[in-house]
Image (cartoon, each protein chain N blue to C red):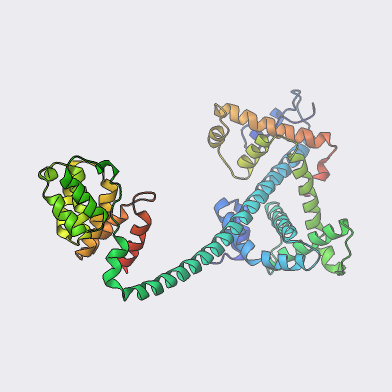
Length: 191
Length: 235
């Protein structure tokens, strides 16, 4: 299978091309994950931890690109390894596990990435508070770009108007929960 | 909650379907410019978070698929090695058995043993035939069965005559008798399928034999033996 270039991976995310994104994710898992796994398992982590951290690093990378804030690095693998290491360090500090890794320079370079991660974790916790069907419908619409017709069929909603109304209600519910929990703009803004 | 923007109107505005002044909160009040900007930012960031949450789900699925493929790959390798080892063992045994080729037919032929319905019949000729059959004197049994006038019409007698002919290695005669029995009904269908295969095998008609053997299904008469014989014929 032909290798996807770093710049094409970035383009796929910018264009929100799902097929290309899937192929890119598959390649990143093949090329980068083994190194993340190697680092984490040698630093008090499990294989399960390495999967979680790697996936979170990809998500942070995705958000940066979609926000238009990603500056093209010389090597995507190096960048993702940097995010992964810093996310793992944060996890270790939180658990107060002793760690010999002490380079503060690298940590400072990835402050924004760690902040993005923190915000996403907050939003995902709120997402768990809305009902499962709402969550799935919103992800299907906004991430998978399913049409109203497709959603109508999947969720047995009777009509396209009913589907749109359900989507609005779910979104409204999500925003309401965010505000109820005292989260303000800054808490889930990526600015 | 009352200050919440109406998402449906906000989306219409972002799609260019309505003006900014038409974007209202849930109480029907117009939003200030600053408030509208704020709500747009919240909305867009929330959409981005939803996209990111969707991506995380996809990555989790991707991980499961990779683990499944890895397991399947390892299982297939183990299975391939096991099959190779079994085949090697089987070929070795077959090569050893090839030295006893004349006995091969005897390894596979066994008479059909359900004779109780014939016992104590009033016809002494039938009793004699069945006695010879049970004593594995197949040539005598076949000869005695042939003397029955009703052999042409009685499928049971024809069947046992066929088995006797097969036991006596009169393969063409056995073949004809079995085909006549099949034409009458399916009482002995499973047994005849096996015996016909033996006839064709011994007559050197391996394709016909294999064809019949492959039709024998698991649980049917002589299924295990048919699988072994198929391997021998294919070899």
